[in-house]
Amino acid sequence: MIKLLTGLLPLSGGEAGVEGLNVRSDSERVRERIGYMSQNFSLYPDLTVTENLTFYGRIYGLNPERLKKRIDAVSQMNGLGPY
Image 1 (spheres, one colour):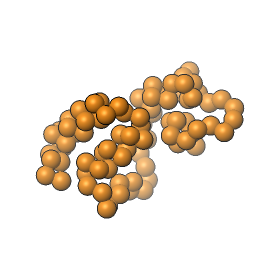
Image 2 (tube, one colour):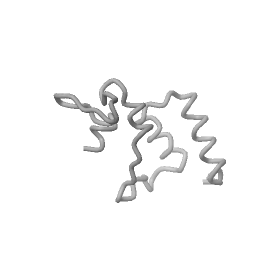
Image 3 (tube, one colour):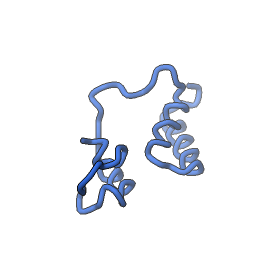
Image 4 (spheres, helix red, strand yellow):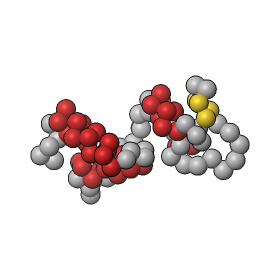
């Protein structure tokens, strides 16, 4: 259900909305308003930190320029550069 509401999976029919936003047409704005904490560890251990961040950034539809800026910012903020 979370993946449907965040636009990560397409709706097979009907309509869905979050805070008045249409899940189909406003998925990025919906994700900005949803906080989700997975109960399972969701990083892939065979990928580097950068590869994991790139993977999830692409899933969320970040364009390459914005993705690079976000990865650089997160890496610097958390001291992840060496990893």
